[in-house]
Image (cartoon, rainbow, N blue to C red; front, side, top):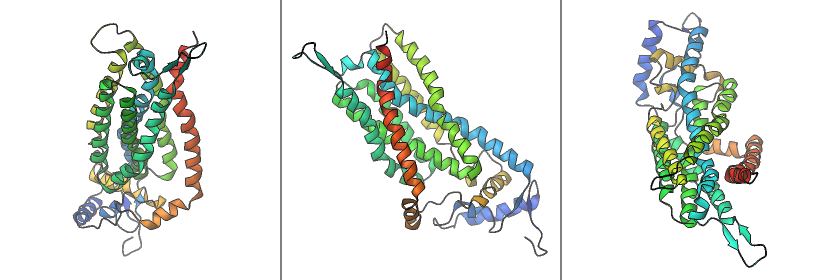
Length: 332
């Protein structure tokens, strides 16, 4: 409010632009303990022009949602192609199945395939905490871009694996680097959307699981038609998946750290994007880990309920993605 007690309105006005310019000059000296929003908005709330707010939300959606949908689709595809690769000769080439001929009839053990599936989740569990810290401490776009490119390279190196032991190592490190994606996307959603808007946007990128089941199935059908070449069909699958991931990793470098530095918004639109998050009192982005917040999270029953839900979901998910195609192949 000004001296007369009136409320300022954010819209296409020169005074807002001047305020934004003055506040931006102070951003270079702000402490890392402060939220990034303090760089461009004042301490008191601004009344937003509704049409301008809708325009900003639409631009954010058009930039972020397709990007996250493709990224999470690649997570699913990289994780799920193991089940398809075993149909294209990986089981025999890497000795993932062991036949016990001492029994009548002989028994085939797929324990190695089971462990190969599990190693991905061991890697994800190991990588989740250090990579989450990197996301919180450093530039989101740079961290995501670097880790995703590394993930793509690891996926491509699967084509060079010659034993089941090597596959175990590859699956562990693949899970390690892929663990950054769900956390990174949740950080992006929290940095741009109000609490009322977040559930729908979260479900948007999670829906990539279903979409990429269709896309991945079509791609794998194409690989099934390969009858020549110096590589096995399952090696071509991993080379394509890794190449697509590397390309996506290069695109990740353009993701802004928060709405404060969103290059796809005008300076005035950045003020609106940040101001609309004020009522949620969640802030935009603070790059300092605070022990009080960590303690609060650990004592929140909702955190543990979500952890239980995810554990139950991934228990089923791991079995279906690892053995689903193999089971279907036995139907005749």
